[in-house]
Image 1 (cartoon, rainbow, N blue to C red):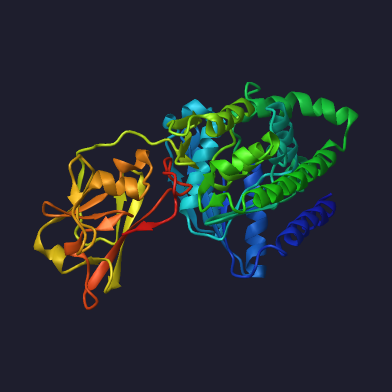
Image 2 (image 1 turned 90 degrees about the vertical axis):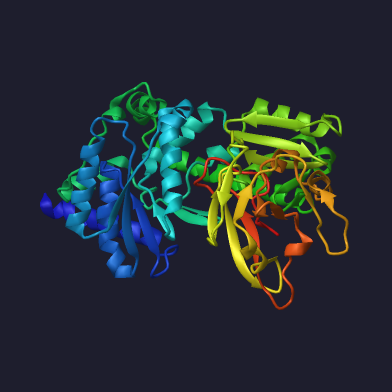
Length: 464
């Protein structure tokens, strides 16, 4: 019996290796999400064998959600397991309370991915398998998902500016994983919530899929083929959206006239593509229809703003902006700047960067005259943007530079003493502009990343 188990274990190991070798170059860094359950324990066992063979650098992350009373025990189990394997582990604690409105499962998933995004690596390895894939497809169809949602999970998902998601066990069944764990005498923890049928996924897993398996024993393979078909259809729709958006999408802004010129199905497809490109969740069908109607049919001067989940879609001067809903902020905030290269800016929930330059930007010498602070607009500010220009009100400058209204009161203003030096992305006061011989600096702002809950519409860097 033991001899028959070992070849099956070697077969699973080689199948995983065959799936990974085409997509994982040597010296790739892999961060494995380890829950302590059997799926992730088996994946860790496989990857710690394969990594030395192929010069992959493996590390592990355990996210402590604090939902279960056994959460501390799970973290301790993961710590001991990784110590035995000699694999570096980090344990991150998260607070699920602020996101409970999304549902426990969705909130936990959001927090996990936010934690993964903060850790530098090439690939994040997750232990999803063929049964997870089938469950995900059925859940998406039951929610009325479109072809993108029905595409379910790919083996490799590349993401701009973020580590790629890797699912090495996607073509393995849950039973194969359990057999491997038994043959290798592996230990794991059991999440008591996995037996709770009140969760939709558990209901499918424990009640519906066993019945389906009696009549359709190959349902995992056939549903996996369906996800491939949906994925191909989704790619074709993206190709169409890229054609429709070639002139319509400018950076991270979409022109309203492009939506108005398309048929409703193509306009909806372009709007979905635009939202997806910004990392926004897909709105429900009714929300998307209402959004498109308001963007295309509202008065030219109307302040269009539609909200769904924690995102907003706005229209300003013929352009569509998508952004995380902006929260409250302290209008009286004053933030001292003492030469730091980076500073957090709560009003936009983003990060300011100060880059050294020569002969351009803000004169560093002139900033030595008085304490330098960052403040918010309070009304009545003026600034002379060029040596030969007249002094202008900040209100007029913001309008001329077409700064969207919802950003105007949140933009950082750089002061030296009580003199306004710079308005981010708009202008530097003439008296503080660096001459050709002077050391200078550029103030820039890189907007939202995936690990922050809020963002502003234009997430490219702005500088002044």
